[in-house]
Length: 176
Ligand SMILES: Cc1cc2nc3c(=O)[nH]c(=O)nc-3n(C[C@H](O)[C@H](O)[C@H](O)COP(=O)(O)O)c2cc1C
Image (tube, rainbow, N blue to C red; front, side, top):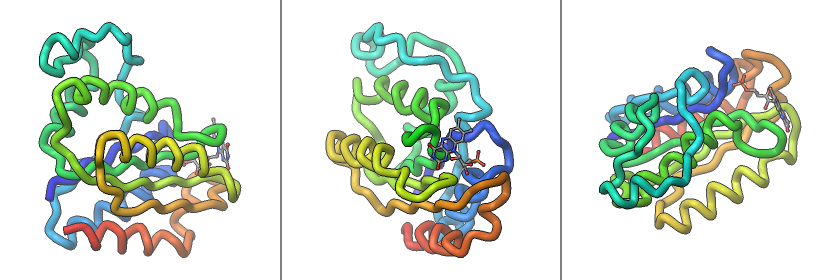
């Protein structure tokens, strides 16, 4: 299947990117096509709540890097959200992208499956992000294929030594 991984860290090559790559590696091994879009590097403005998309078959009035993300959303069977925890939630960078998905709520989504990859310094900080993800899945009737949280990410690259990283690759591999 076509998998779109949306990552939410501005720190290139950091823990979120390593997590996303691990998932992508497993998913590719199982024959999936994988595209990664990093909201941390892209220029995505906040949703204006102008409702233009609802009057124009899902076209967003704002022409920024969300255009290329929406083009991938339209091809994807599955979206994987990968984010660092920032203040007990997903990062602002990925939240901007999630808000702009409103343009597809206007005409319907192609993807029907999702997964969530989170990492943070501390334990017990994932609940808000997971709750938001679950409510969104429920609302859009998306099927959750897995949620993985990894703590102890004190430094850039801590993820390389995380024993749980293999479970991220395994989750990717389980997607067919
Ligand atoms: C703005 C900011 C807010 C953060 N908030 C939290 C937090 O609430 N809880 C936590 O455990 N870690 C927090 N962290 C740590 C990151 O989640 C952690 O270092 C993560 O691995 C960073 O991922 P990256 O390397 O992909 O950028 C925060 C980091 C930043 C920069």
